[in-house]
Length: 116
Image (cartoon, rainbow, N blue to C red; front, side, top):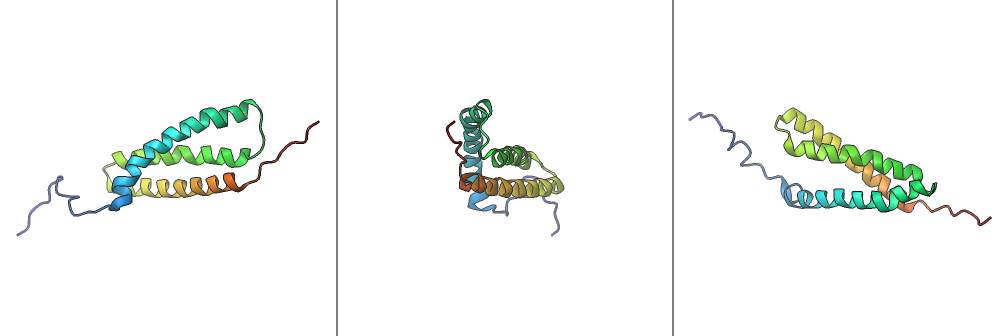
């Protein structure tokens, strides 16, 4: 009656759900590509022109994007359950903080400088 579960059978009964199995693997590369485009056209231009409006929230977006992207990759390639748990928590926490920073960045009014 007792038999050992092989590595190919280990995850057969687990259903990760639609978000984790379909939506996120397709949307995540598009988000990373979009972040690269935004960095080049929006962030780098703002740094070059010394634009101060929304700089703190923009830097927070960059600070949370890097560990969010790296932990998403490590979550996909890690095999050890303890490391997967670590990467899940890092990914969820940095993703939530990135999302909240995006809301703050968008809702903060632009400070317009007066013409001199």
